[in-house]
Image (tube, rainbow, N blue to C red; front, side):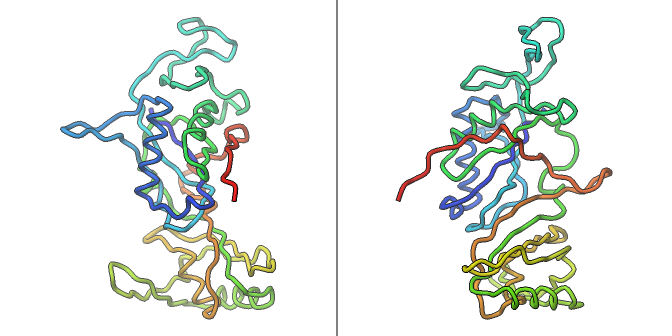
Length: 274
């Protein structure tokens, strides 16, 4: 069994890299006391697998990490029966600060077990700017999260771009057969056609700061980022804040998220003043 956790990353913490995210996540898991599997050998490490790495400086509403669980026990039934009583269901031992291990009562049973106490405990243990929005159990079968992701949803700003110019730029981009952009890969400048990777692109709004655009970009055969689109859309403008909104998989049932956000999982933390 694996615990699949969906979390957000916003504000100042967007400037820490993927490795630092892994470190703070591991520290939060240890603080909560989840029974997560470790690697073997002289220096055991906590086993965890993330979705697609988020570029440093980007925000996200849909990041994922999977934690393989090692301990199993009986969970109390929704009727309040104790462990070992009739009607209990087998599942992993979830050690929470509140001591409650029952499935979340706010989620439909058909959606699978959801442990909002775990989500709340992890959110409290994570630094300001990182919030757990869902924690669900999976059977651990199928490909890894990185291999399963086929596309990502994004919102990004183009600073100083007006509504008319933004609408025209998007229309010209979508009408083009090829859109060649440059990126730096392993110290070398590489040119590539990003047009086939853009599933859709639209202007959301144009406040005083600039244009806010929304898009879905392919993650295969390589991940395309909003920063690659800005030079083609508005060469004289800079990209503002970019936010990943979704990571999509594609299976027999069509496009889906690895875990949808839960309405009762979030817990508000104090923010820094000043």
